[in-house]
Amino acid sequence: MSIFLNADSKVIVQGMTGSEGMKHTTRMLASGTNIVGGVNPKKAGQTVDFDGGKQVKVFGSVQEAMDETGANVSVVFVPPAFAKAAVVEAVDAEMPLIVVITEGIPVKDSAEFFNYCKDKGTSRIIGPNCPGIISPGQSNAGIIPADIAGPGKIGLVSKSGTLTYQMMYELKDFGFSTAIGIGGDPIIGTTHIDALEAFEADPETVAIVMIGEIGGDAEERAAAYIKDNVSKPVVGYVAGFTAPEGKTMGHAGAIVSGSSGTAQAKQEALEAAGVKVGKTPSETADLMREIMKNLG
Image (cartoon, rainbow, N blue to C red; front, side):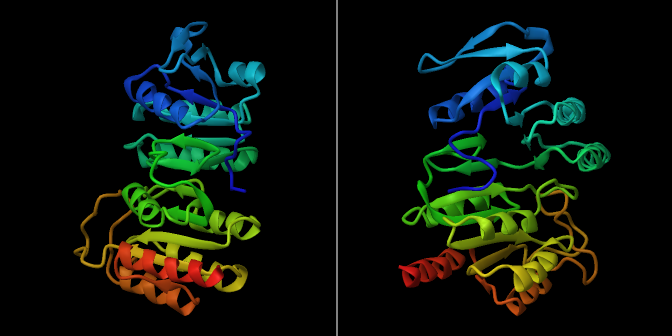
């Protein structure tokens, strides 16, 4: 099985006719994703031809696209200045899953659309500033390359896009039920805990890889959740052991302040919860490989 995204998912792309939207819609279609429409009010009614002969209609609004196609997933490639309005539009239409790929959205905007979504209670946001989500062999919503790994029984949740790709490659012999990049901004929708809860409930996911990084306390909270609620084996990796204090490293949320948010503190919290933590991504993959071989 999978979490959040499956073969029955019907996907629309907000910002499909932009350069990034076109490029990644092409890739999503090639991987078998059922893309049923794009959204651009200025190009409503047009049809876009993609490689392979697929024609995708452009709608004037998310609501219109949902009404005509039954879409239940939206992938947002709208530029930062307009991303908040795009997400709010999708929330107003009660789109079940909204995957916000856009990087560089102001924190104020993210906070506002996240709280708006939370108050409405009808949508799940993944991101922003994330690679999206893939259930290999079923559907791919975002920018994760679909040919890294096939379907399997490992669940992967990661703050980092590139580390998502590396972990999928390192464990490609086993495959994944779902791999989800939740993003590294200070405010994100779906969290490590949300993904852990879903993987725990998924009967086809037998083990979980969790990748975190310096900054904030998300990994410590996830460790506490794992200790109390997760029965499946979990291995972890925390990026940023050599990061200097007070300097943002890559992601906007990856910053150490005093003793808060250090990689060492996160590793200790995870290990105290029974999570095996690798010193490198490759060592983390080795830990999972050993678990999967023991599981048969």
